[in-house]
Image (cartoon, rainbow, N blue to C red):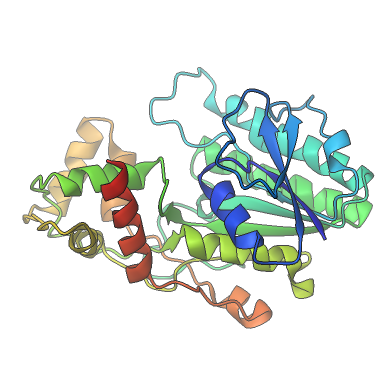
Length: 318
C-alpha cells in the first residue's frame, strides 16, 4: 500500500510516520518547499508540495497513491489578527481539503482519512458524552471550517466512490505538542499556585500515540470505509486531577487552591476570556465505543503512560 500523508512534518504527522513504519506500507510525506523535514526517517519518501489552498496542485504527488491521511490544517490561533477568521480557516480547511480530495479521487486514491475535531460536536458535553450520532454544534470558526470540510468530503465520496473516513479528536497531548498542553506543562513545572481546586468537570483527552494508532487503523481496516469516529484515551479526567497527574509526572508538587467557579466564569466574561475559562471549568467528554466495537481498536497507551512520556520529553527539551 502506498500511503500519502498531508501535514507529515507536524506534531501529529511525525508521530504517525513512526507508527506507520510498523506496517507493510510505503510512505510518501508531503513537505512544503523550504520546510524543515530533516527529522523524518530516510525510508520515507518526501514529496515537495505547495501550501494547501483552493488552487494548490498535488496531482503529481498523488500518482500511484492508495490512501491519503490528511492532517494539514490552519489550526487555532490564540491572537487572531484576521478581520474574518472564518474565511481564513476556510481557505485551507475547507477549500484546500476539497481541492486535495478531488485531486486524490482523480488520481485513483481509494481511501481518504480526514483529521477533524471534536469541536464539530460542540465545546461542552455537559453530563452526556458526545457520540457520532449527535446533532453537531461547531462552536468557532475552526470547527465550522472542519465540519464544512466533512460535508464536502462526504459528497465527493458519493460522487467518486473514494472511501472517506473522518476522525474527530479532543485535545491531543504528547511529546512535541506545540499548543495548549505545552503551556500547561510550563505553568505546572514552575509550581505556580492555581485556583482550580474547586472545579468538578470531566474532560476527554487523547495521547498522540493513541491518536496515530487510531489513524493507522482507519487507513487500513476495511470496515472503516465511510465512517466517522470519535476517539479518546477512554479515561475522562477533571482539570484538577489533570494538574495533579501532570505534576506527578514532572516530579513537582501540584499547588491547587480553592476558588469559586462562578467567580472564574464572571472574570472570564469581564476580561473577554470566557473561552479559556470554559475550557478549564466545563466538561467535554466523548464516547469512543464505536471505533472499539467496529474496528476492534483499543488505545495502546494509558493516560498515565502518555503523561509520563510527555513529561519526560518536556524535561529533556526545556
